[in-house]
Length: 114
Image (cartoon, rainbow, N blue to C red):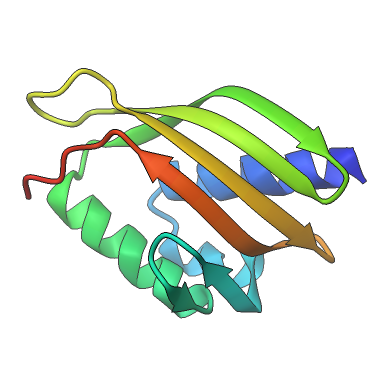
């Protein structure tokens, strides 16, 4: 299971970096819940990614560390391509169900000036 969870996490970051917003429908469960954003469903992820890429079109995420245990991944990333900032860090934990992300918790050091 850990390999599936790791692959799902990497697929999510690859889609984000490629600006492949439509991939959210394949990566997140229909009942996905984001605790930090208090939103449900892959459509909410698509909207969030679109807004982020509109504000920061050159941004990309680098996975710095990933720890997987059971159906959960804890990931520390750095966000590059944000003007005027050193690459901020994000910490995310997600739960995977049937090869898709079902739930997410997260913290970010990103200053959202835009």
